[in-house]
Image (cartoon, rainbow, N blue to C red; front, side, top):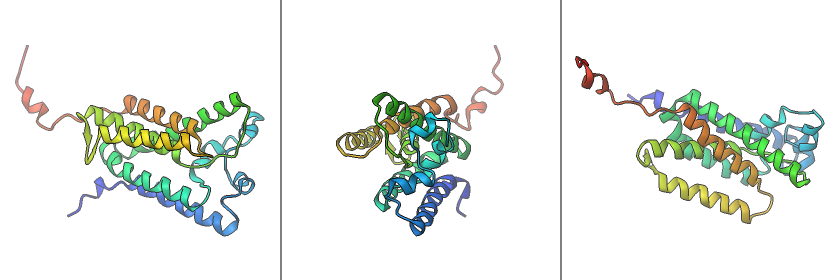
Amino acid sequence: MRNYKKLPICTIAIAAANVLIFLGLSFMGMTEDSAFMMEHGAMYVPYLMNGERYYTLITSMFLHFGFSHLMNNMVMLLVIGYSLEPEIGKIRFLLIYLGSGLMGNLVSAWFDVNQGSYAVSAGASGAIFGIVGALLYVAIRNHGRVGEISTRGLVLMAGLSLYYGFTAQGVDNAAHIGGLVSGFLLAVLTYWKRKPKHYKKCFKGQGL
């Protein structure tokens, strides 16, 4: 009988929510149009600076500019979430995913303010880089591997993704870096490697 507790339910639910929101917006207008996306929850820093639309720090994590943007993020979410969520549990996974996405957006907003250049931003990549960072920490704690993914593979994946971001146009690298670092730190704070089941038996009956 299949162990449903090991299914990455939160990962699947987040991916489904992103897809459903994208389909809904696609029927209403053009998801590659910045003005349309801003009206429906994408983040625009000048509004934040004026004390408006703080909710877009969260809602923008569930919006995507076009089908390719959506699919690239959802494939990475499913691959990483499939390994991470069963290891750390659903609550921690949600905390790290949403916390990293929020911190990624805050870092992106700070960077825009310092650069004096503003663009409408949306996408789950900050949160996804967060779970990459978390999985990297979990792999380190588990002697270099979680499931089929090794620490070296994770570092390579994160490095290639960041390299692509820095060499392509229209990619929010500040959100990626903010999410990656935040995810790693949140994992440090919330994840403790499970002790083996025989741990208590090994010390049973021992005194000082």
